[in-house]
Length: 141
Image (cartoon, rainbow, N blue to C red; front, side, top):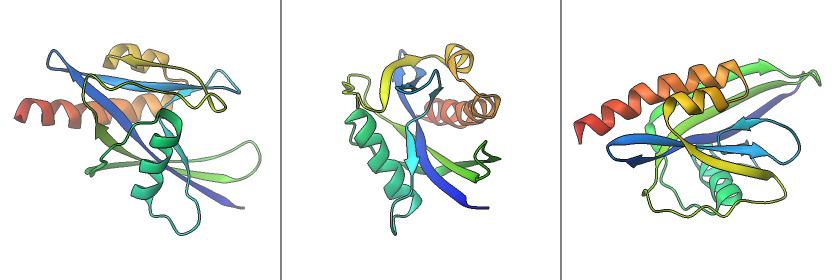
């Protein structure tokens, strides 16, 4: 069994003291998720997350490595997948320029709307964990 490794981030902005989460919709399916992609060559997880966010959204981000979460699951093709997600705050005024070949739509959502929009339960649970970290970080500022 081959293991595929991907990395990305829960990208958020703060509007009126509350986080809004960036979700992307795949151009090839109805999947809504976070910016992420496969590790290439000898990249580390942070470099992959930064590159994938830039490729998919044109955002230049700094990844917060104090938060790291991981999902692991078996895919329909028989491969195992590990997805590593960090968090990344961006200014509230940033403009997204989506990568049309991979992303058909995007949006900023509060936690409740983001949980409803995410396609898979494991991503919903991960967002809830990330939201706790992000909310505490915002409160401490």
